[in-house]
Image (cartoon, rainbow, N blue to C red):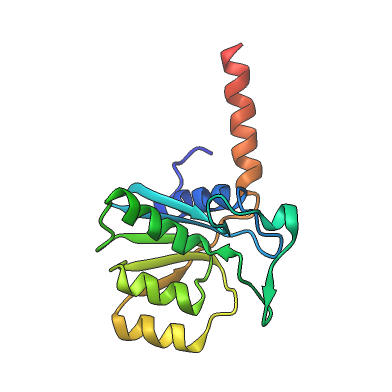
Length: 162
């Protein structure tokens, strides 16, 4: 990579890395909350702290949803609350478009913009609420071969340290 990647791609790549920590077997999601180009929080979908994980016990399903899982966006927002990091005016970078409940929490937290990589059951009411609240949302594309290029640069760096 001869040029630096744009900020939106950088932060979305971070959300994808976080998604790899997910303990959900149904969908691995990651979220990063950013203020002034600095990461203030991150989250991935998984069980409540101290509870068994879906990876170990299977999903606890009710009405087609796993009730054991806390979504990545909610975990990132709760981490901000736990450690006193203000979210008003911050942006959130999510691997998948937020569900209705996470969209409501994002609005209430004062997040100003949502960047996402994949559409995922984009609920019409979530879109309505986000539009009404004036929260912009933008799908971001990673260039084809993005991570291959990262790996190649890493290999090049390794050779230079020998």
